[in-house]
Image (spheres, rainbow, N blue to C red):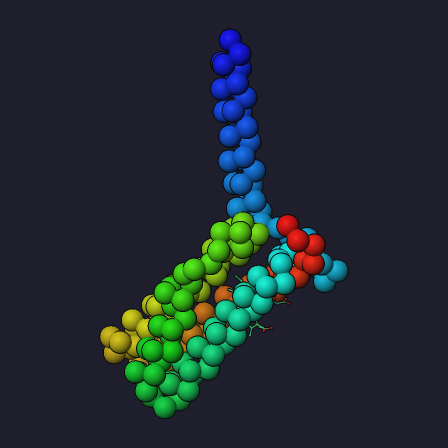
Length: 157
Ligand code: HEC
């Protein structure tokens, strides 16, 4: 009887743990800001990590536009590939729990689109087609920036 109660308690605790993890995975750790954006609350080093990734995206975009201007498909392809899905690996699980699901999805889709852009450059798309695709991708950057901001949470958790 006691053994059975224990296993029921263990199962209930397990379900609660999984449910809590799922809620965090979807909602992330956020707070509304005065300018009506969603602030994702991160540890200082996690915020730096995400911002460094952002600067890498900007660098990639710069490489792509320079490539389009010079009609250099090789440069467009390699700049886009550098910020494709391969660069999205290695994000630590703790950070993944703090980012809202929609943020993670938008982030992943941006990386995926850069792989598509690289594929297009590799398969003979015109500079104008590539620029159109890049412009669509920049809309995703703009959209996400209008919704989210990152705040460093100084309290350790
Ligand atoms: C999933 C959401 C999201 C997407 C998609 C996104 N960003 Fe960001 N980016 C952010 C957030 C949030 C910040 C922090 C802004 C703040 O705190 O006000 C940021 C900051 C930046 C910064 C500033 C970096 C620094 O060191 O301060 C740059 C540059 C940047 N993003 C470039 C880009 C570019 C280029 C793209 C598209 C190719 C892009 N981002 C796509 C969410 C996103």
